[in-house]
Length: 460
Ligand SMILES: *Cc1c(COP(=O)(O)O)cnc(C)c1O
Image (cartoon, rainbow, N blue to C red):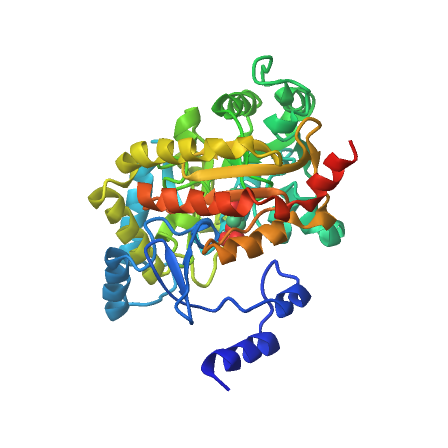
């Protein structure tokens, strides 16, 4: 048995893959990745794939970057792990300083954890305990958005709006309020771009007018609801939502787990809406995508509500074994160094508009209903009927077909339902963008991939 087929056999015997129907998985060829370089993943047979989803939205400067590798390697020689409870180390301290410098001035404190779900869950727990220790214990309810996604733990599922993922656990979730998604292509208020005055925020206003004094916080992904279908929405929605929440005296939690670190063209998406949150949740791109790490940033006001004599019992009793792990923090510092050295954000001023222009022609395809663009993220919503916006049914599994066709073109396309997207590393060059969009065109312009459309057309 070759090494590859032995691995394949063991994969099928021992592994259970995330977000994967294992019965499907067993039927297809195993994609066994051996190494990666820049924007490319290479499998054991030497086949090359464009990492068009940045390895689940986290790779920032490309794979195998010498600066990040060097930072982690040097740290490995000194200290790989130590508890952060009551003990400290240079990488955690220096990365916290950098994060405070890069984010709005009112965010002054960094609380580490190790994944995006915990970053959000920490913000929720801090907000709740803050209100208890600030004389407003009646503020214990949270608001989230339809199609919002903040993670897969019980707490973050309770605030999410992606019931497809979370259905079986409904009985365990705590109650929270849900407001409409600013899903412009399928506007919940029946408006279009010209007539929109962000009427979809009315339910938030109504809720806050009625129960505002019981609300602890609103949690929202700034500018794009990513896992909920790559819903890009106008910055003024966020600006106004933040103002409403402020006026009601509640907290604003911005979940920048996906958008942080340049993906939307600015270091953080919040800059484009000029909002300042009480809590900022970061993870995926924090280490350049090299190691698991997360951070929840908050204000001095929140910090002070937990500060006091031991006997007052104001401590935040929360922590994870790997909170602030030195190797991960070293990767984070190195990634920020690359932002400086390679002028990463400045270079996006060229590549981002170029990518957006290259995507425009996809709108000519009869099965592409909407094109959504934000920084290095572009998404196409596929529809059965462009005029009526009739979606493909989940049983059509168009996403699955596109995934398989993408692999044949050397692309890792992993559609979310009927939404095909590119989520490119910031290091992608014009030449990479040409190749990726040409190959994506080859996949998506092929009518053989959409037999439903021909069938319905021939009935007319
Ligand atoms: C991925 C994601 C999370 C969860 O992060 P994990 O590290 O997968 O737990 C939370 N919020 C947003 C916006 C995300 O995209």
